[in-house]
Image 1 (cartoon, rainbow, N blue to C red):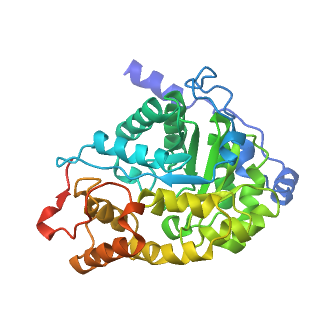
Image 2 (cartoon, rainbow, N blue to C red):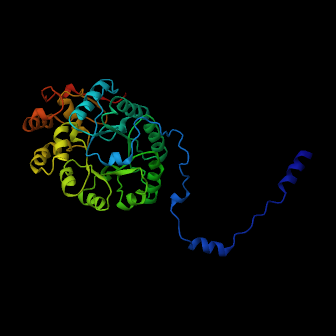
Length: 365
C-alpha cells in the first residue's frame, strides 16, 4: 500500500510549464516567406566512399565532349545470369566502330531488372576491361535518394567515369524535391541528368536544370522531350544529348545537341557515328529511320533484345517481363538488315528469323 501511495504522489507532481506561444509570433510565422526544403537538407560534408585516387578519375568537361554514347545491352545466359563473354564482345564492337562511351545498366541495359550487386559488378567489370578505351557511365539513379547516393558512391568507387541520374519516378516528388535529390548526388562526380517523362511520369523542366547548373559536376542532360527543349538548353550553353534516335540527326545538326545517347548504335554503331560526326546527312538519316521505328514499336529494349538475338550476337534469352517481338516482326527485321546491308550491323553470323521455341524466358535468376 505504501508503494501505491508513493506512486500516486508521483502522479500528482506538477507538470513542467512551457512558455505559451505568443500569438504575435504565430502571425509572423503564418506570413513569413516559405523557404524551400533543400534549405534543411544536411549537406554531403562527408562521403565515406569518395576517393580522389581513382585511376579513371575524369572531369565533367571530358564527358561534355562525347558525341556518340551507346546505352549498352546486357546479354544473359540460359539461367538468367549475365553473359559476360557476349557482353565483352558487344562492347568491343562499339569501341571498334567509334562509340566514345557506354551507359551501363540503363533502361536499355535493363538496370531495372538487376540487383544493386549485379549493377555495380557490371559497372566495375566494364571499367576494368574497357575503361582505358571508352568512357563508362553508370546508371546509378533511383527513385530513392538514399539508394541513388549509395549506388553512386559505389559506382565511382569501382571507377566509373560519370553517373546517369533519372528523376524520382512513380512516387514522384515536387519540383523543389527534384532539386534536393539532384543536389544530393551531384557532389560525387560528373553527372548526366536524364529526362524521360514517358517512363517517369514527370518532366524535368529547364528551371530545375538551371537551379543545379552551378555544380561543376553537371556534365549535361539526356533529353527525350524533343528538339525544341534541346534548343532551350543549347541556347544557354547547357550540354545536351538527344535521347531519341529518330530525332538525333536534327538535334545534332540543327538544334545544337552535342550528340546522342543511343539504342540503335547497339546494332549499327558505325552508321550512328557517321550520323553524329560526319555532318548533316539527311540521306543516311532517312535510311536509318525505318530501323529506328522498328526498334521502338514496343517499349525498349524489347526490339533491341530481339534484333541482337536474330543477329547471333547474344543468346535469345529474355529476363521477364520482356518477351521477344512476334514472328512477323522478326521477318521485318531480316528484311531491314538486307536493305541497310548486313555489313553495317554488329556480329558476323547471318541474320535469322528464329522460331518462337528458340527463345528462353527467365522469371527467376
